Length: 325
Image (cartoon, rainbow, N blue to C red; front, side, top):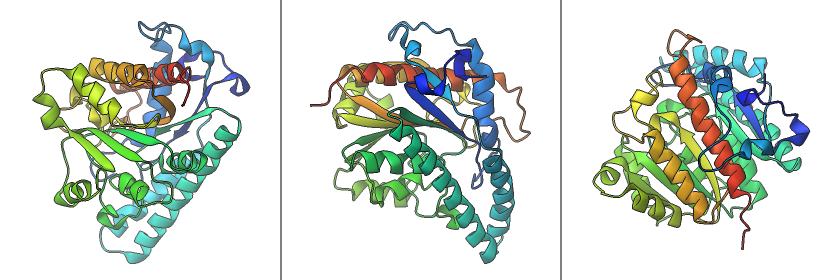
């Protein structure tokens, strides 16, 4: 089955989606390893014509087969992670080793997608999964890009719980790397620690965070969208954690937080972003979850997740019509 039940071969696709069934270092609820499967199963329910971007699905979206090896490694690494949290230093080292191997897998696959002159996307899994993709994007564009990060959490903790590649550390890892973007713009943040607040304050403007509480006080969402878009350079990578949305849209996600975006706000943000002349060069969607019982019948979470993915794909294609000055 291909995503959205559309017949499309890889060679004909504008976007190639890499599912990464991984949740080794999740710190609260589990079930994100089956997020890609939930999204794929639900995707046949998506009607293909959109009010804004019409028939952009015809550009072609291709869903790469997931790796059973990565899925098995996720569960093995999760057991090591639990031992590490009990103080087992060897388990901690092994956890970090397995996470690094997952990152390398994503990096190599996404390099291949870029070499095929296609747009790469990752569907996780927990929010540690797209680090390899961001690395590939950063190297291709030599740092000439920005990241739009939608999330309840800032994800700027250094080695959270001792894990170098924790889902709570992905943007610490990005912003201290050799492939860091010109700008990290965060939207919807409402659950963060003092360490992260200081990191934002001391970033000298490289990290621009639109906190959820401040956004809620504004009268016009569209004006907020325009300010968010203006804070970004021309090339934009999107990183979407589904817990950035109101929990009514993602009740089984691992770390739900009251507040967040509604679906229409997400649509309008992408509409304004692309309308402002930005080009989307890649994206990820993470933390859609089957819940702690790994229930693949969690239709609501999968349904919302695949509709978010459809918006990302459609607006990405729309943005490719822009020319970079």
